[in-house]
Image (cartoon, rainbow, N blue to C red):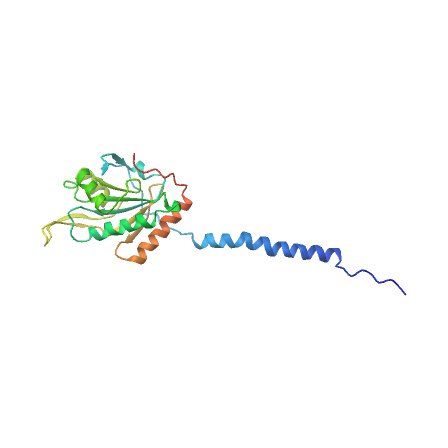
Length: 223
């Protein structure tokens, strides 16, 4: 009677089995994170570049385009005597400041530009900033010569800045944009979002986080 051979797996089959197990473990570990990252990738438009400018912020500091370089910035347009859309705009910005306060969003900054610069001095803007709980390391307010503001607002920021007399409440009526703009670390405008549309505001935050994650932000804000 012949002795029985040990029961086992031939070498080539064992090797194939090990390779199959390795592929089953390693490939998902590489491919799945890649797919997740692709899901959060956005093809944002190029809407032009913010040119050189020099204004003054609510901290009495000179504020130039260099202060926007190296991080994403969300921009809006308000004025302190506004009794129409501005309180809502600034309240939305205050909420953005709160929602973008985690470490991953640290580099995202907020910028409000006054369309009533003759009245909105740095001190007036500082009081307005305090009213909405603005933190200067996150959110600044700009004023300066009217012609410089007009050139910036109606040029690269594609907005309006047109006096329309006096509102029913007695405040100046100045037509201006109700939109947020998103500027990337290279001073390129990458999106325009209706502040009155909450899904659009949520989309803007996702886009800003994407730019913060992929843009090599330096967290600098102000000069």
